[in-house]
Amino acid sequence: MREEDKQRTRDPWSTRKKDVAPRGVYRHRSGMWAIRFTCGAGHMHKEQVGRVKSDAIDERSERRARARREPGWCPLAEARHARDQAKELKRREQARVSFADHARDFIQWAKVNHRSWAKDDSRLSRVTPVLGDKKLDEITPADVEHFLASLREGERAVSPATVNRYRDLLSGLFKRAVRLGLVAANPVRGIPKLKEAGRRLVYLPPDGEEEAALREALAPGLRSLFTVSLHTGLRWSEQIALRWRDADLLSGFISVGRSKNGSSRQVPMNSVVRSVLFDLGAGRGRPDDPDEPIFVGAYRTVARAFVQAVGRAQKALRAGGKDASRLDGYTWHSNRHTFASRLVMAGVDPRTVQELGGWKTLGMVQRYAHLAPSHLQAAVERLVSTELARN
Image (cartoon, rainbow, N blue to C red; front, side, top):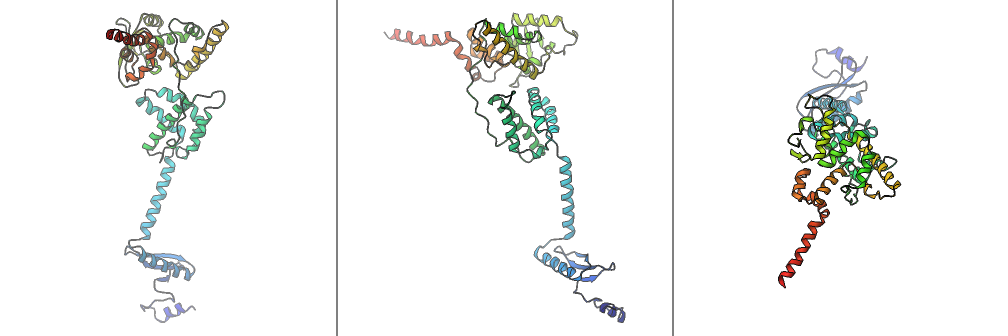
């Protein structure tokens, strides 16, 4: 018989410890060794340790030492904290979203808050196949850099300026993710923009062969869209958003509800625009619906078709022994440059050009100032009149 059992048999009512173990270490009724101790918060605790008494002795000594070392420490509170942390980690894991899911949510948000959401959606269609399957918080600056570098490779290579637009889009997307608590940091933040080469002003001269060649190269369905763009200077987002209620053919004005700078404006129609809209109105599918779109088309589809038409127009010009260099780098947005350039060359003052084109500042119109030679000539002629007055 074990010594502690003998002692218990001799005096079952004794208050003395019934086993040969240090105070606070005892054998549990399950047969395991257990410990009893007071934590740093003053609570009494009992814990089973195992079948080896020395382990229980060491465990109790460690617990008592920690209670003295860390006032307020309690194993129950520590266990609760560990459980809460595990639950939080599980919640975060369940809350993690993929890039593709966040991109879809971003576009829904952008439809309400960004006028350029259609362009964003078009660009994201090129990003999602690369980054879409990754969790948003797994994407690193290296991942973003590799994607941006890939934009300049292969048949679909783009210019440094376009790469910078993709970078800006991704940065905006991740900034929103940070704001929503989906990621801790924006991986695009430290990636520098590419240096953009100084761009020459690309426009079509009035009554030039380039416009005729380009119009001929365009698909018939795009010619009215092209003509209205040249004669109104509307941005793509403004033009594609037009409804028939926005075009008052009697007063001769187009209402732009919300332009890029956030304000509305009235754009006057000239006779060419009126004629095009009359022709389009005659073929309307829903003549009684004022919300019927005037123009229909996706920017990416139209932009690609337009670039291909520019290439065909240049080929036709060269085949006829003509100079096609003015069409180098001509894109859909260049129609807006053509609109402003022709106004300046016709003698329209910069302030009026600014108002017609919906530019936010006059400085944005100054790049067209050199196209008004008569204005510049008049300025230097003032030196002559000043000299004559002195003599």
